[in-house]
Length: 73
Image (cartoon, rainbow, N blue to C red; front, top):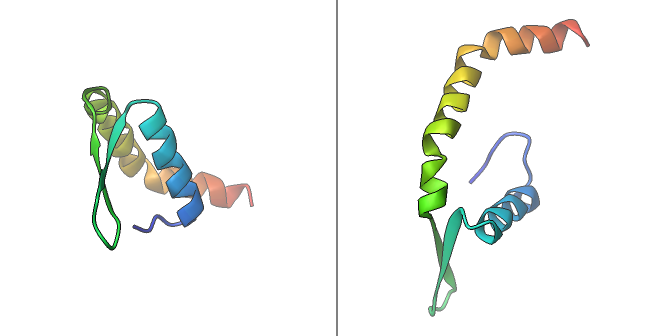
């Protein structure tokens, strides 16, 4: 996975935090090579609508945000 401006280490730390906080369930498979998968828990799923609304807001206001950033540089 790649997210512009985010390192693999930062993404891994965020995922570990979400697992620790009970938002994501991590399942380790006893395989070689190692395989791990992640799914949202019930609590994590309850945040989906809120996160999607925030994402939609960001997409809707993206140009305004970029213009504001560029005007302060």
